[in-house]
Image 1 (cartoon, rainbow, N blue to C red):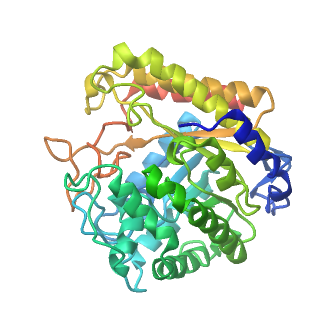
Image 2: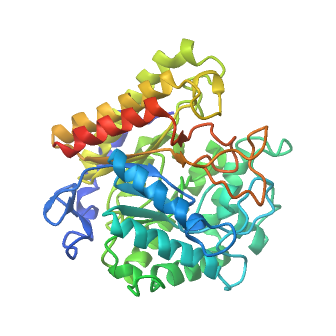
Length: 441
């Protein structure tokens, strides 16, 4: 449930003393925070963005890489007005059936030179196009290995994969959330973070900390304190401490870049708005993040989308509006960094009708634009996700290990379920129209 407004206001009352962003005076070309807003070289920084988790895979020199495609994808996104991309900078070897392979690391310290070089390449190419990257360093979900992979390595309980019928929801979320209190797992994680954040690009020769193509480091994709009330509430202090200490640690390695949580908002925080406030209070957390997933949260029924859309859309509008208010109370910027809806009739194919998806995009874009015009905390949006030229390689549209035609839908989902293909004319027009409106501000 959502806490009462009185409880949320009480939590916010303690926030201002802790909410002074650490990146208020960044070097030229770096995104910073000033007066609760994102700025770039002294001017408001507003953007239209997307998610391209597989950027490092395309940039890799290995056989699964495709640098020519990477260049074309970035050019296409730039032509639409997309200037900010959220990309995956980690990946842990996992026995999960739907996990990525290859990945950045196993349990040792022999990190993948190919994928690290791939990350160098995508950052260099984004820099050439005046685009900014948000790089997430871990994942609550096991499609990239993530926190469950670390727990598997340290032997913290019996490992199982998401969706295992023998371990129904919310057991997976409770299991993954053990990560925050596992000292051995976090020692492994921090070693990787130190290596990555402290890296020097093999392409530009520039240290990552000195690269303005990076907007922010992100602690993880959708970190949650747990799934059940019984486990999650008791785990909240550990969860808050992990956020605060990990963000502060990254700042010791790189004082030039912003740091964010990767949180979904209240729906990823035991449906508690006060949890969102507490998670974003630390001074080392520079802005608030928000994800909006009405199909996954049961607000819009994927099997009966037309009949349930209007009610679900209203809940989404309320959800975004509430989080704008939370960001204002924290005096921090807000980025709606994931939002998505399935196509009509739950189709996966390129060019399949997407009338309600397009309407949903317009709704989220409209909320963001209105707040930007009002001088509010919203800095930008990142739709989920860019499929571009990628296509499903199998008739059932599921990802299989060894596939190279990466799309924005991760291996845990059918390839094409939420993503935007380069031929999705109507959705591309919605994105381009919004980008034009934001650029005109």
